[in-house]
Image (cartoon, rainbow, N blue to C red; front, side, top):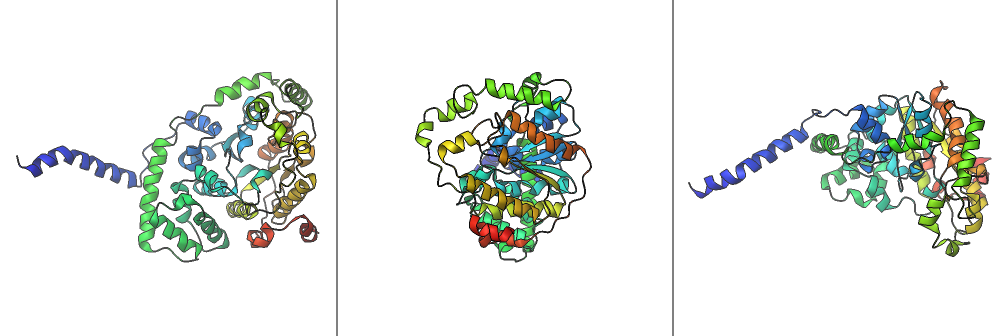
Length: 423
């Protein structure tokens, strides 16, 4: 047996298997079905792989799941968390949690790209964190945690020559996440420049999409964190029948019992883990913080623009900052009011009128679980607006997208100038 035959005998099967696997991955056929239990677990997992994928989200939103877009507050799963209340009171919807620590507007925009069809003429909930709107905007490293090539390819295959997609392309090019795929980067550059994609690029994107979609089907549900038992456990304190006054009393009591080791009405666990060793050094340290001038306002416009294209009826929640904590750290109340005015103006000017403004509840007892995240009574008050919105018929939204909100002038508009604009 000559050398070539020996080598083929050794490596031939490996090469053949690799070719077959490649052909399988780029084929347009789906070869895995996602069962209901997997969707149930994924909905509460806050898994980055689920966020970055499409197949599980698509299946969930085609059923009775409603997307709850947000960030780290979604992790605060107590007895009054939206998922707990929806499950315990057997509502017609179940929250699908989309986001986690560091998932800001740009992440949410690209995370939506694989579910645009499922968002058309549907409802959604979005919690807006003031902390997203820092002067430098979204952190590239945090963006990378929630970015996937599947999101980018899905978006590129349907991108148009309009302000939304050109702006999205320019923002994506500023992130290090897209630098490793040369053809993908070139396609994004073309969209940013308002140019059409070549036929070879389109073919590449089609094949790449099939490959990434199959990888999503195979691997995105591995090692999912199962929070379903946690939700069942914390719900045991809830009465069988929904009664707001009774629930509020329980929330008050739970807040009282779980905030005994600090003067800020912050949960004991959070304080011990995150603040006990350093809180004294933070006194007055946030006096110069601002959430009013930020590139995030333009990234947020991407999300609004996409909602409008999908005719998605959205209810937005503006949470407060724990007043005990903001007084201690010197975080400006005037600045927070300016932020609230600015984000509300951006919403209402374009027809996004379903807004749950909780910013004035910052001093309510046991409203917050920690420094910036809703807790016991905060979740409950949010539920008073969100549950009726999701379970009852709503007037059809009438959106009027204004590209001014992409502009540098809007991003950098401060409180003084804001008064003139919003009059």
